[in-house]
Image (cartoon, rainbow, N blue to C red; front, side):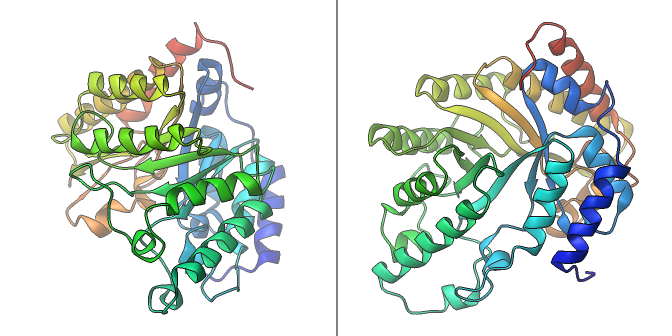
Length: 351
């Protein structure tokens, strides 16, 4: 990866601010805004700083961005008390230049933690102080600039029970409530979200997530939304009707929902039939979101197949996103765009 200093990142963002056009009238971002939701993606900041075509595509098609790795604990605090915001600052500057909202990802997660933290010997009170300082530092730095935060992620197991994590072992089960309260203190106007995979439709994990967030609401923890990640394949996706019903029961708790990380992995090389089926699945999940007024955004985990995480973790699979390896739109893109266009004709635009 090419090193990027804060100065060069700022210069690059400033150059893009003048070089990139606003989204076209029929772009996903403009159609989604007219339909009353935001359309987003996770951003590879290294690519953003080096690949102009990728940056242009982001600016044209999306009005919500989530840093793929730039705000994860091991990246932003590689040593105790030493914070590195180089990548995050570059993304926020890019987003502000192109009228995009930023979702901060992620404050409390069991993965991508630095060795100094996981291999240290800290008391519960010391871990609380470390986590509090981490959350306070990140959220305060971007107060008023990052509109929402994934405060916590993947704290529920496949059986629907609370997952044992580094944080639950070290602090205790109240770490989640503490994290939300600390984030709210740092930026009372930020939208705070719990984010998880595998609980989008029906089943034990979906019920476990519902129980978790319902309990947070009962105890007046400041949680605003639930993120449904939606990492799926053609043969293991939830039923769209189950997704819609799950969103509705979360809405009944007063919680907004978002599709936060959707991708649909295919066996490589992908054939025409698979690409068509993939397009239908993207459309069905977006339709479920549009059917629930408190579903506020729809995001993919990456914009183009070139920067997708899937091939590295699932060899022989990929082609999971709306744009191919060269940044060209796939059938899924056109399917999503047609649905958004129809929805835009009958919905109020968001601010």
